[in-house]
Image (cartoon, rainbow, N blue to C red; front, side, top):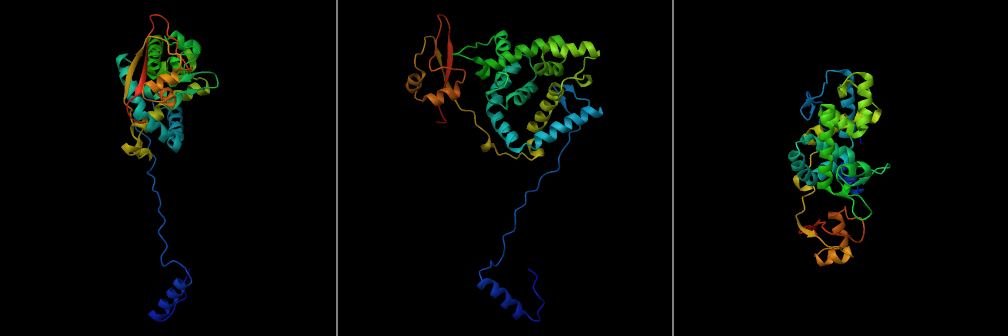
Length: 297
């Protein structure tokens, strides 16, 4: 409101008093504005130590696109960062043990968002294995047990695939691309186009975006504050301690088993999503390991 100029202090005081009497607030609270940091485009980015040629115009633009998209998917990216605090400590030592670069944990990020999801095509789990591919890499998949939902075992299976792909294509970047485009699909284009560098190949839209999505999530998750993801440590999802129970005999009722272990059926399934039925059939000589949380419930 603009006040008409008056001579003297008394007129101003009366005017203000009148506003107070009529119920108007003496002072409006200042509106809090959130100041966003300026968007950052990195000078250098690599995948598994293989440099991304940002000097090539289309490469730079494709990376910029995925970086902008994921930096502005606020809720989705925040959830991924929170989940990574729980999931990455499981994945990282398995990747390292198998000689697979640590950057491949970001492949799991774009495949599943670090949750056990099901694709329209039927791929499942953190690493999104199709049934045949999962079985080829040593996973047990049936109506009672589906190890695509087993974080440790599916990570081991992913390592086997990636090591084979690296041996075939000669680079980790192409190995990552083949995880999406398949051995045959990527190899066909290499043969036809006469180039063997991911950044030189013209691939399907999904596969041509694939590595750039990995790179974008890597950049954001390694430098979250630079992209306005200022999460406190207490906001991240914690690792829940568990004890491991070896099972060598069939369990006819998992709900009863859960109660015997001091938890309920829901919690049992949260920590052992690879158990796909209400029972567990254990063949002679077979052994399963079930995780029972010791805190958090």
